[in-house]
Amino acid sequence: MFYGRSTALIAAGAVAVLIAGYSIMGGQQRPKHCVFCSGPLDRIVYEDADFLAFHDIKPDAELHLLVVPREHYGTIKEMTIAELPMITRMHELGQRLLEERGYAGDMARFGFHRPPFNSIHHLHLHCLGLPFRSRRAAIPFTEGVRAWFVPAERLINDLSKGQADHVPDNY
Image (tube, rainbow, N blue to C red; front, side, top):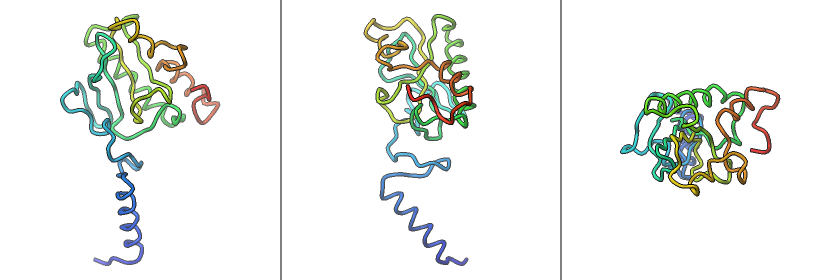
């Protein structure tokens, strides 16, 4: 097998990426220590080739699941029209998981935290089976309150307009 200059440069680039603390996944760089990229194995309730769903470590509602793509994505501020199918599938999966557990309609809420109010820099959909555990727990999941929360339906609607190549600046 021939290893020429190009191979050496590619290998050097891979080493530089690893030294910088990043690994390659799905064609995108992801932080080496992202807790959502592999998922918390003890709390997973669903997995397929594209998504993981698991119980939130600090639930704010009677049922609090997170749906995350296996491929590393940052936050909703980084989403474009190209990610609309993924966001839609995340929402549909979250709805199905909550419905299977008896939460639908007004007893279910789905959405994303706006940066800088997200605790993990890996896109994740909050799927909440209501009621909330306390009034205080409801605050970060109420639309318009300190601009912390964007309902999944709103993000899908805004992305589907296709007028801009990214989500609105108020995200």
